[in-house]
View 1 (cartoon, rainbow, N blue to C red):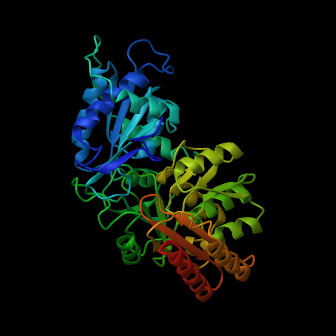
View 2 (cartoon, rainbow, N blue to C red; view 1 turned 180 degrees about the horizontal axis):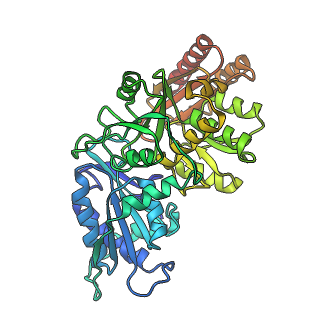
View 3 (cartoon, one colour; view 1 turned 180 degrees about the vertical axis):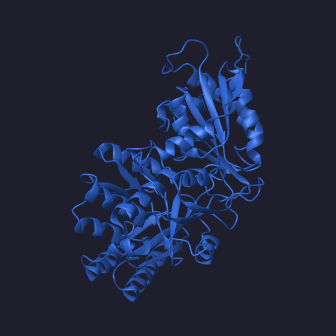
Length: 450
């Protein structure tokens, strides 16, 4: 069956357009209830239970109510979590032995977007087959169940997740003496992250903690870290930490106001595992991970593999290799020994633990990995058919790779949503990198618009 609604990261769309309407959400809740309600997994007798959490965007109230009604009509009980980070829903689904967890969020996107993610009873993404069954069930006529479900609010959800996050560090771990600026993106971590870091002993100055339903990710958070960078310097803080709207991404800022991306954070976590925790089996990055990251891991004999962009693909490769660490440059970091999905707070605590054990400030420790210059050009084309396989394009790529030798790489990646091919070149010399990217792009443009 061909997918119509589910993408690699759930269902996404502009509120009120396409799939993301209250009517669709009602039918989605009913379909999910019918499919997931019949699945095994919950040992308790009685009706199955599905949890619903959301971020802080204003549309969440409307969609929460619609999903709740659909699920109840299908004979499923509903546990309402309120605003919670995406990884918290994954954790709480396991904790409450729920049949599934649903997240209403469009992650790092602005407030007028929204989306739906599903977690299985194990706190992982739903299998493809189950998503396809839910899509098929959307066509079912809505019939009221003879045994209607009930809804209840889970009042201690935030406290449970705070304790879970803290428990991802050793029992005697302390952040005492560390001054941290947190940017919660006016999103789902606004009432959780400050408590986690304060309860571990840090002095916390928090920004992006006043959500009004419209300001999620607005000039703040991991996609817009400029305010965090400025505040870290003004506050003379040791570092800053930025989350995105649903709390599954994290970036850092050092005491000089310099941004530390996901590749660098993954390196620090892996390096800490290698030197203090008995070794790092390997790390999964993506096609977009910086080549300097790969070289730094190679120098330390830490295996590294690249997956396609998207946390689903990173998790698949981690699972296939039996590795516990992976993620993306965006800051979506998966510490599988602590969480089943990307978790910004948990990942941040692993980085802080590395700083503590190494006994070095962030601006000093990050220098152990040298980021290589990267230049990307988006080439808009009349058509993409056969462009990447054209002899002239292959020749241009081969020549660039010959010039870079073992000190860089070339990546040509079609856009999934636009008639674009992204030409990316990395290497040690920024001038050479830019020149080679332009040369390849000119060939791609000629073939694609010829």
